[in-house]
Amino acid sequence: MVSFENETKEKIENLSELKKLIKYAIKYMKLDEVEFNVIFVDNAKIRELNKTYRNIDRETDVITFRLADYENVVFDNVTILGDIYISIDKAKTQSIEYGHSYLRELAFLMIHGFLHLLGYDHMNEEDEKVMFKLQEEILDGYGIKR
Image (tube, rainbow, N blue to C red; front, side):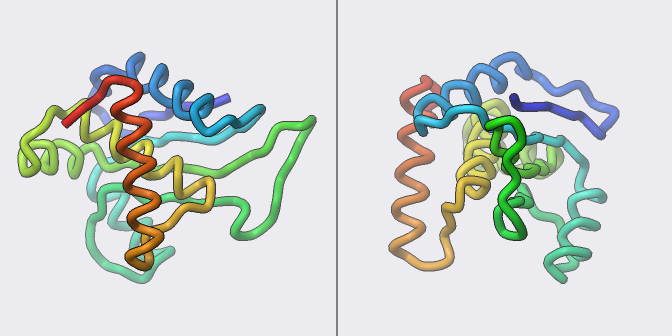
């Protein structure tokens, strides 16, 4: 089960499409019974999270809190993965900068965060290639292309 929360005053466009995409991604990754949250916030909130938990005092586009980094939580055969925070302010700005739709940027950030929840990272070049290839495979396979 994926829970979507909007902590901003803005309506999240294409939320139903994002819900379908994450279901596709879960199936693509051959996962059963996982639970996590996707939380939409503004730049002020994501900056606060970034400063508090990463000691970086600036906005970012997505922050993921992976529960498995601390403990494995399985309840009634459901693995609880953690939380993905997405800044809708950064998503809007980046969609313009990168020349694609706001939906494409939100989808990218959500899948990026989802893969982090699964343990993927991009701390070195090899890991980055694996993670970014997988992101594109999921987005392209679902039909959200650049």
